[in-house]
Image (cartoon, rainbow, N blue to C red; front, side, top):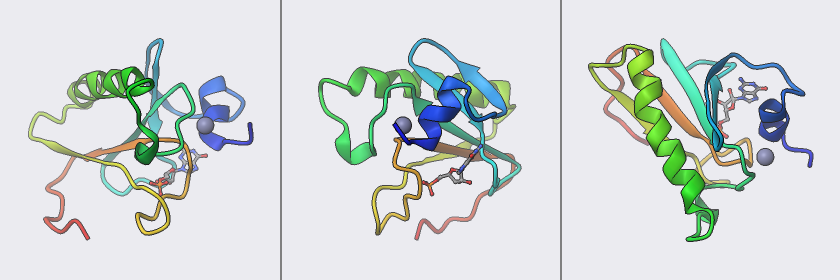
Length: 112
Ligand code: 5GP
Ligand code: ZN
């Protein structure tokens, strides 16, 4: 499938890996919006959070189990933010479910 994050997970496109387990892959965003900016993705292709179902929710649970480990390893003890963009109005540019993990400084209060 012609999905850039599936290619990154397979290793066909290089990435700066931060974490990996059976269900989850995490890597540094190529265009960081904060001192720490990771993308945490399920290895299985899910188009966006709008496509989460009972059947694929195990992969999503694995992502949210990995996020605190990634944050701890990055030294984000003072807090961080997790964001997922969905569809056109959400400005989702890559159509493979991913969670941005941002931190390393006080983030802006505004969400939109
Ligand atoms: P979205 O806008 O879909 O929520 O986020 C997509 C994110 O993927 C963006 O922050 C963008 O910088 C990042 N990105 C796009 N292509 C690549 C890539 O090839 N490698 C990495 N590491 N990040 C990418
Ligand atoms: Zn994909």
